[in-house]
Length: 66
Image (cartoon, rainbow, N blue to C red; front, side, top):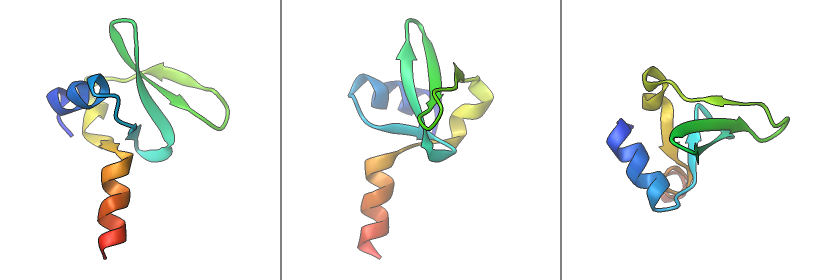
């Protein structure tokens, strides 16, 4: 995913994840952050990490089609 795609998906309220389904991406003021839902650990997302983001619903739809 590219940064523009990420910001658009977040603005649309989509369920964006990073690296795995456990890491939820969200707006935190003017930063894009990630929270690991199992233990609440969170941090800011670096630009170099954006490519590992994906929209969860779209990934599940692709899996169900196979």
